[in-house]
Image (cartoon, rainbow, N blue to C red):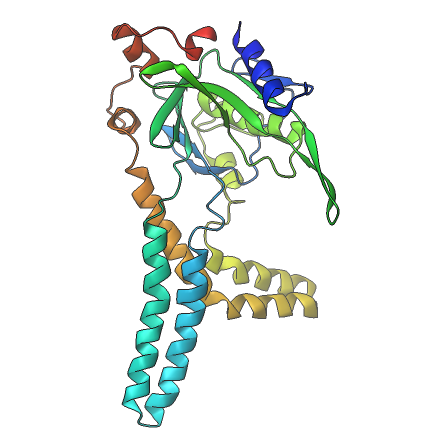
Length: 319
């Protein structure tokens, strides 16, 4: 059974019905323009990282408790200090430290999931699941996208669409998983085709390309695309401030005031996320880390497996 057949069988088995599948290929354009809607976390000369979906909430517990609760405790403590009550001031400072330390320790013990990596140098894709490395070559890769609806009595019908790629475990090719490259909520096949074209342009023509996906000496289009990624929550009020200066609406001003109120939470959340992101990048196996270096090996993991005499996995089906 070829790769497309395996994708169809696995999707049908999981949902109990066949969905209209739109295949996506590395060497065949979809007819859409390359575009990404906040899926790309990093776009560098040598690799591209897709978000895992947990970036939006990472750091929020520490931000709410450490940022809001801690800031409130400090303000109350300053009131006691102004009255000369050192004892209650010390208690408030201790409470502020506890508000930060407890959720911070909990979040550090739960590392950020690793992103899906696209390596241009070795032309392969990496994914980590439960501490195990999965991979597939880019050349000859096939992905599948399809739409389905979820219905809720409060929200009604909501359309979702994943992009799924079949990968196999490094060193154990017989173990295979369907990897979803994007958060499927409120997506469509057309949107996924735009995202796939962005990945195709990066792997086939990149690292820098224009709005048509053709190779470009300038990174202007990529920088424009990456600008949609709001990396810092604490910068939200700046965007709203700009909107208020343009429309002058009282509701926009009220929104900006609310964002300023939550500014301590946003600062702490951004700090925790940045720290978690740095820590998570070092959790890749050495086989991946060395291939992400500009001077690292260019051999594919599937070639390493073949040299070890392992049977061909799903990656070989696409070649």
